[in-house]
Image (cartoon, rainbow, N blue to C red; front, side, top):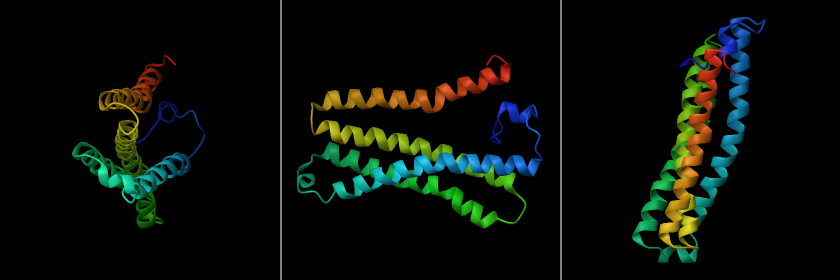
Length: 167
């Protein structure tokens, strides 16, 4: 499924040309990106502002490290989730929408991965300020496992079932 096809696309259950299918897939991807771009931009803004708070100067090395890793992951997520727009602009009018969709889908998947890491890091920072560090890390890891389950494992299971005709 490297090309972004769904099982229904492979079976030809839609009455559309290849160009129409590529247009639909790109429109679907853009809708998905709108949701994730908004989230990553809010998180990035929160993280940028955090460094300018008075209390931030008092954080220890652990929190400084978590902050730096988190804000870099968030910056990378922002870049990757916006990259499909640049790809589309560069390739527009070249009749390569299928390639645009495939590349953009890979950017989106990588961007979601970095967004998940950013969310876990931000959670560690927030919880570490309100409870013991151990509990902050444990809760953040549980949430991280939930992200992996919801964003990776469950979708893969659904794809596998659909491919096997079990859905």
